[in-house]
Length: 268
Image (cartoon, rainbow, N blue to C red; front, side, top):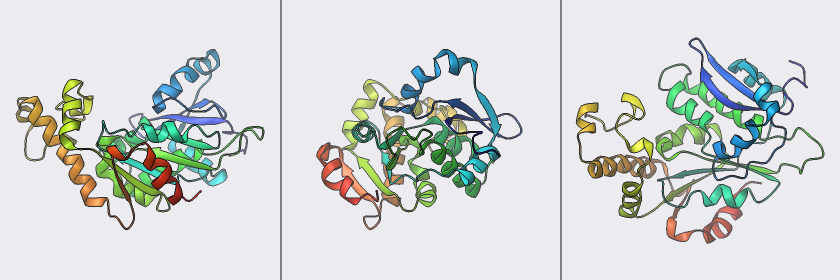
């Protein structure tokens, strides 16, 4: 593959075409991602006439090959959270630096964890390779005139907390931060405006309450269903958030903990 082939192109979407995992690329160069979430940052970039007219689609193998040929830096921080706990402060604070790439809940990562793995399109080892290659393609500069990229972070969707071990295996040098909040406060917030993943069947039969079929979950009182689903996330966090290798923070410690406890522990 020519060194210039994918320079300046970013893998904005991963998808299954019925036979293999495909990558949708857009030529974004070093445009900063400063909105609270990945999709919000991409929306104005992808709406430009150039990016509406010119896109590239390649098999996943091309992304893996680009990683081998042009590796970017690995993330130094992985943020896991229980939702409605202030986790968005992390990418928003870090993205203020022109030398940091803050990726906040990117759907391509969710695709690899929640679709490609669950459906058997990729093995765990292949998913790890794809995660590294996808992040690498973003975590590099394509223009020498751009501010040098010195660090990167990745915030994961709350419902993917159960995949924390795989993500920590993908980037063992990164600091895992687990952000929590008093459960009742999270439940109250969710019941005021419920997130889609707390609706029965949102992710199909692979994500829900074990031992209950979809009808049983759908007819459960909303408060009970949400409480039990949030309980799954808390339980997943408790299983893997070992103090020796991870940092556990409470909502009440923000924003000060970012500067006082997180930044000093990062491998820049």
